[in-house]
Amino acid sequence: MVDTVGRLRTFWLLRPMFNFKNIRELTCLFVTVCVLTSRSLADDQEFMEDFLKREYSLVKPYRGLGFSSSSQWDLMGTAVITPDYVRLTPDQQSRQGAVWSRIPFFLRDWELKVHFKISGQGKKNFNGDGLAIWLTRDRMQNGPVFGNMNQFVGLAIVVDTYPNAERSHDRTFPYISVTLGNGTSSYDHDQDGRPTEIGGCTAMVRNTVHETFLLVRYFKNKLTLMVDVDGKQEWKECAEITGLRLPTGYFFGASSATGDLSDNHDIISIKLYELTVHRTPEEEEEEVVTIPRVDNMEQFQVAVEEEGMSGVQFFFTLLFSILGLGVLAVVGLMVYTRWKDNRRKRFY
View 1: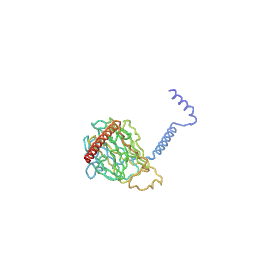
View 2: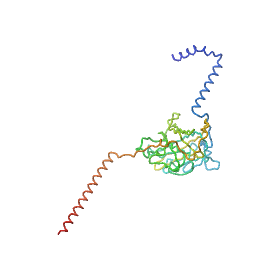
View 3: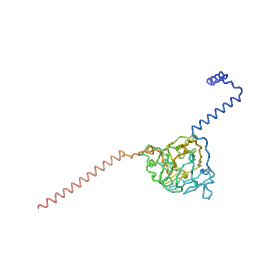
View 4: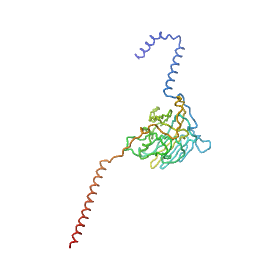
């Protein structure tokens, strides 16, 4: 209260310096300051507007999804439409499902918001496998990578809920990763996709009581991945990759797979926005990219150390080695004794 009174007193003393004739002039000045401030903040974000592209979006009541000729999205595998979500896979073993956009994507600067849900009856680390959001050259391809083909060409945002190599590196699951495919590299499930990963973070997205979202923003060869999974309605940065060069003409999709373990994997909405970005003439004349790549890929390579033997494993290995040497020594002694006896008989 004292601080507030002091500020009012200071304003009253400084009032003659401004000499406002009426409240209208003060209001105009306030509006001008707000406009200038908002413009400066927009310039910091490097883009001014975004526009929802309905042809690349998937929202309720999912009228653009189906098997008709006018549909903009295709269903695949076990994917089914409900009034509230598109279920890629149910909480059952050995299922694969996907949705794929039919329209090739040619925007240079864009933002993708995905509202999804992963739930199931299995306990932690007894559920699987996860889902992935795709921007790839090929569409509608079954495969082992969360319901899509291996050795894909494009970009994948993988929401992995099952740790295949939990002890081999410092990582907590569920884990969201950005993965790049050039058509020759394979997704390594045994290492949870680590060799082709270029960024990621831990995100507790399974069996939550609140909504879960991820956001992918791509402009000026920079991709930013953010998540909102804590129920606080605020974005948290997950990964930022600079120097990422993505071709145009690819297709968006979402897929999921279950194996011996399972979960429900649901897509509630996919919203694609075109970003209006200010570019310099040099930036406008960028090279045409046909295969996705990232500058200085070596910076993302992480050597995964093999798990060493535990104390119990070392003990039994040493014990069996000693027993094996003992057996070999006994057999060798028996053979030598028999050979010596046979040699003596030759002299009788």
